[in-house]
Length: 423
Ligand SMILES: Cc1cc2nc3c(=O)[nH]c(=O)nc-3n(C[C@H](O)[C@H](O)[C@H](O)COP(=O)(O)OP(=O)(O)OC[C@H]3O[C@@H](n4cnc5c(N)ncnc54)[C@H](O)[C@@H]3O)c2cc1C
Image (cartoon, rainbow, N blue to C red; front, side, top):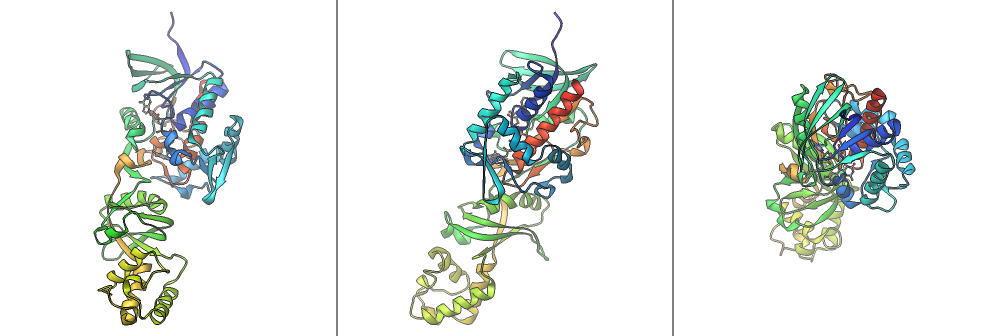
């Protein structure tokens, strides 16, 4: 009996692998595309995305929303399979989307399960052969294609395919299937893999002086600085900042975290400067504080900010500005103390001491270097017939749907390129 040689095999049944398999099967027809997934089910991570709602893309797609050694690498894939085409891809599967603030796109039922369900239904409809519990441990290029050596519950199984798309994802969130398996496959084939760091993750910070704020959320503008003798701003984000017992979290922190991880790695002593009341400038804030001194001169400092700032923040800001004890009255506040308090509320500094690590990260920065691939097809320049897509490449996107959009666009481009070459 002759051995089956599949025209295309896809390794990894996550977002990009499912998109690649669907695209390839659309060209090659049923029974011709093999999808190998090491977990018990395909798409497990997808269920956790967007807090269970799956923020599947974003209107503001551009290279500046991506990071890595060569962020421009994303452009051919995003141009070939842009947002409108992604929405049409999902609409053909019956999934409609809704847009929320910041251009974020979600499935209409606001359930990540809906996205996974339509992808699974489409894999079925297109006749993709899905093998779960199948861990591709080695990839051997040979005459006419590849041998994929897999570990399965029944022992070792070898599959043969003319073209292979690797969609193994990154290391982030190992509890949801993240692993470094893809890097090992590619480095064994001579590809360069750059060191990885967590991104879209909570930050550990020196909050010893502000323990009372743990659990509090504030609308704030947060700027990440590289510290040292001449602090230098890296990036600013606005949104709901959450203080925790280990540091800070919330959307602005998640957005800055990848840059903070890099700054920590480079020994740049990063810190955050928090501007509370982000719509007010320092002068307006100062004026209000001076006005309050006049109007509330008999009020104890404990309640001096009550009605203007959250109580704990108000008390802490006064204490940190040297206006202790809080049993004093508003009328005793000196211009220096009021000025210091206004400055503190516009530039409240927190030293970043670490990140929540890969365990808690949503995305991996770093990975298989994109220089080894043709961005127009995602084919390896070193191993013809091998393609790569998704998070395993040295590309990570901002928080807000950019990572999944990269998974859809790059997965479809790799799947299409492989199928056209195989066909
Ligand atoms: C909690 C959380 C929330 C997130 N929320 C969002 C969001 O709302 N919006 C957004 O854009 N992004 C979000 N992300 C990021 C996004 O999920 C990932 O960037 C995206 O899933 C990457 O797709 P991928 O296909 O490259 O990798 P993955 O989805 O990780 O899939 C890789 C698959 O390959 C399999 N695999 C790996 N190696 C092998 C092997 N050797 N053999 C067989 N199978 C293998 C893995 O088991 C896995 O199923 C979130 C991530 C997390 C963890």
